[in-house]
Length: 178
Image (cartoon, rainbow, N blue to C red; front, top):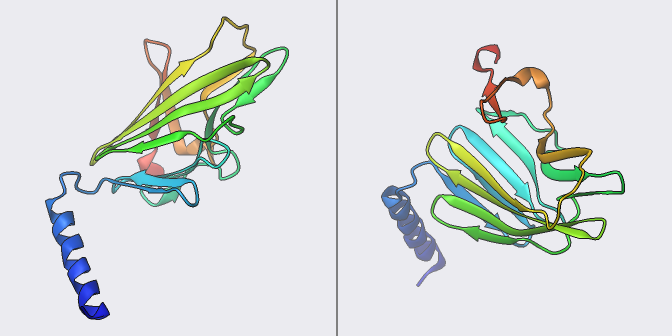
């Protein structure tokens, strides 16, 4: 089979697969060589790095990058005796990609003699991305500062927030200002 014909057949198969895909504009691409996952939908594009760390390094909303490239999004905890974060992991996390979910398991970092374990789950749909974090801390701690997770944005004026009745914070992207 000639190389040009083979490329044409592969292109046709790719187009057929894309047309039959249930996920629409949802994408998840894990590059294990660079330890980076790109995922999102038509409105939001995320990049996650898991090379010695586990953190979002990019978040693009409607074409605008909103995360600080230096810090991005990660988890951390600080006590009177030490600190730990997902910026320095004990081992490489396990990446599991399904049709519209990205699971990052076995995120382990050290705080003094303790090992904190987290699992992150991103569920990507055509218009939303849900982010769930499960965390295990092996014993009670007196925490002075925590970011479970901590986001560092390029500009705080990009967002407006509201406290929810269960103690969380809802963020609203300021679409009118862009």
